Length: 145
Image (tube, rainbow, N blue to C red):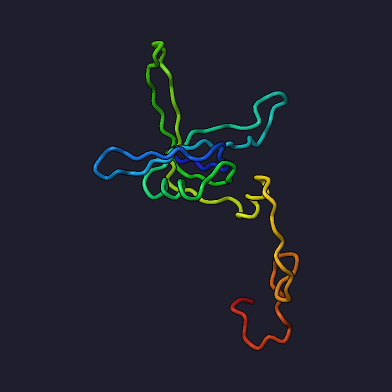
């Protein structure tokens, strides 16, 4: 089984290209900064896996993913190699993303990116903790108990 699940932040906006075949498939490439669970003193605190996604997923990345966005990427590892101009064989590892989704709310993402979040206007239907107040004398039956 070859399955990878990563959660991290994009280090830059995705690089978008289109295949030159008849389908003209969208391709998105990005790098994630994934925190290491256990950090050794003086050691690296994060890993930076390269990711590639194709088709509708790439179109989603182009439209919605930006530098600093925290996502969960699910896919598979793909390894390869090539010989560079100096004649040295270089080995590569890429995550081919099959699923991707946001790992935090848009507001939290904006806060982490340094953007100021506007506070919603106070109203009687919600409290500061984000939950709606439900009156005690509600006549309809709640769908859960």
